[in-house]
Length: 375
Ligand SMILES: Cc1ncc(COP(=O)(O)O)c(C=O)c1O
Image 1 (tube, rainbow, N blue to C red):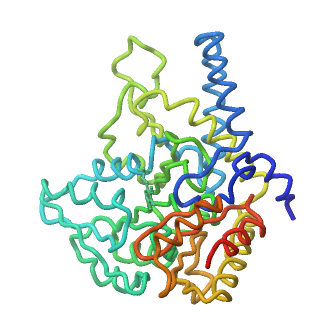
Image 2: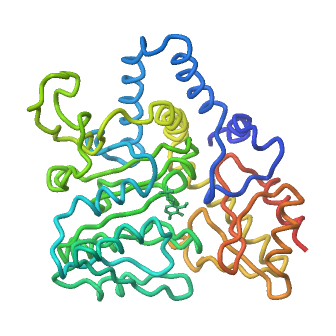
């Protein structure tokens, strides 16, 4: 088993808080800040002399991001946030009036507005209903018709923690010949995913939550066969084969996902993300998911013992995620939030519940600190 107690030492946030808000913003480890500091200090002291080294580092991060999800580095583009990747898809499909997109109620707005804005070109956005926080794949299937070009869904729903079954929904999309785009920011880093076994076409995740990377970093995945089918609406000088041949204006677009990067990525943010990814790869996502499941088991059991109602779907392990939500009929949410904040327990309030989202470096004491602070 990985030495999670040793890994915890890389997270100074633990000195002050029981930090249980990775569904909000994740903290940076010292390994990440050291990597970011190294490149910014290099830039401070040597200007751009070592640019090629930064460029090599970015190449390493692309490979690490690919490895995390079982993709090829050619299928990865860096984006500044989740939205940017989803917008690449919205802007990259050649829509015709009367086309439609299927998404669901309760989605974070990052995965709603890019589709709603397509109304101007005659595209309809359809919403599957969420019942008790669950989205039924059959309801998604029923909303798909001959004019559905895309199903756009979160891997894990931000407010309920419900984990959509990407395999089942992806299979439906393949059968019905529509593309499947996944907002994976609430799953990636906490749960295991292999795109070689899961029928996903596009995926986007900001690096600042469960991936424990800097804000401004993010990963966009485009399935190999679709790289040349998605229109590179935002292509720029960085998107072409001979991008370092500055006077050549007829260079073709690269046939990798790098064509979706218009220029140089946010180097320090990407390098910081790379340091976080290296830790994930060293531990292994199987072990990390196991750890997150263990801590959420302890949490759910403790909440129920104290008479709290766990509101995140938890009938089966498969529908759970790193997010657990709860409330209590006799306790006001603002009061619960205040007590937790006073006890240095960091959570967030979403809808009618408190949302708790522990990560691998958290421990049983963090969960106890939360439970002890609850009336
Ligand atoms: C499901 C989901 N998607 C996207 C985001 C954020 O989008 P972006 O990375 O574009 O800020 C969040 C939370 O902030 C989220 O919970």
